[in-house]
Image 1 (cartoon, one colour):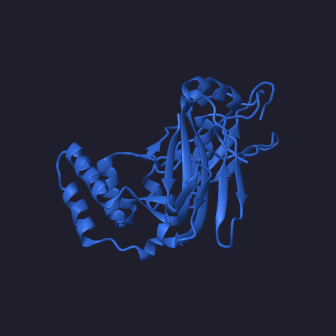
Image 2 (cartoon, rainbow, N blue to C red):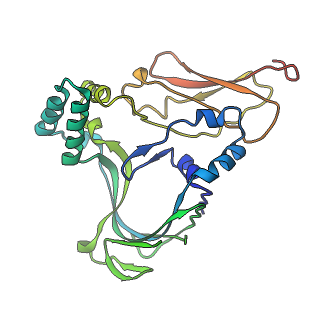
Length: 281
């Protein structure tokens, strides 16, 4: 069972990234500076709107696609190079946008086929999502989510009623899920990727919320980032921001900074407890 109290907490559990029209959430540094997590969520409740879903989904087939098996066409590469030749940044961005409209915004490493019924309700302060996984028949998986404006979307299969979709015929299957989503430009060679990134300006490539245990007798804690960011080829040229949310109110104050192991492609977060009169180092 998964419960989401508001949209902000849902974004936390989904690594701050949602893919509909592709949006990112900036670090909430000012909100979380020396503020307890529960207090922060309380402050944010008045500003968040959630979307509730009721959905039935039947997975029938999964396809995994490796990046090395995807070939970039000369036409796509040439279009990108032509866009980057524009002198004005707004022109470069406009042409790159047209490229995504022509070729697609992203590619997915994992694709699920089957059938799904999705009922969508908007503009609710709180959302609650319950999942129940069960086996319908060999090779398929049913997931039922229970939530309460209603939009009904049918994708794949044969619609029977609001709680049933028939997926026995492969001819009726449709794509119902994308997983491991990547920018279409990440298929380009690294140097061309960097030129695209420079043209578009700085973007959030990855964001996450990790729970870290800190023992009061420790001088510092090291949290590894290298394994989480090893798929970003130009990590040494990226800026990494950190902030802390405490799960309880106490006298401890913490600071963080980003350091590196032996090279600039292996980042880590170092967490220190700031000494005080009551709790000297």
